[in-house]
Length: 200
Ligand SMILES: [Zn+2]
Image (tube, rainbow, N blue to C red; front, side, top):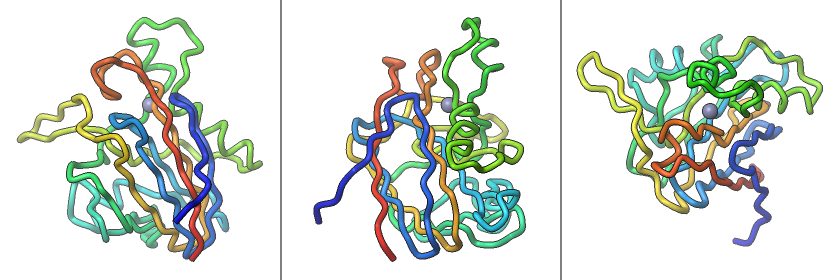
């Protein structure tokens, strides 16, 4: 199948409008890139994909192919229809934000996933809700007993996921700009990812 792929440059974000039944294919083109992912109901943007509710409803810390992501009103929002990666996708850690980069001593203005989320929604004239905790696709956050670690990713070039909308949604992706810690690889270099929308 030939389809047109749209680039999300490393460190940037994008909002994608999906009708129920449509699927977004997301490719980790160069591997090791974390993509923070949110979803909002278009009927009421205060209904959002909730990792807290998803962990509860699925009874798991990590999403698995075939499972759904649930909203903060316990509706099924998105299905993880395909996942080529045998590892895990984090649902524990908040997105990077201006205060995290300040914590690391960066000057103000560093790109961050929080601002990418807010900016992407404003391009669609959607008033953003309080920033939900994202699904951090390909982010490697192993849990051992009570310890949570943040370690370099294990994802490979060309790994992909397919997310199918189970209601009319906006999906927001942020190719995480983190270049201080090795969550996007030990060379600390954010890289592009690519996506395409597939019909129902
Ligand atoms: Zn980030």
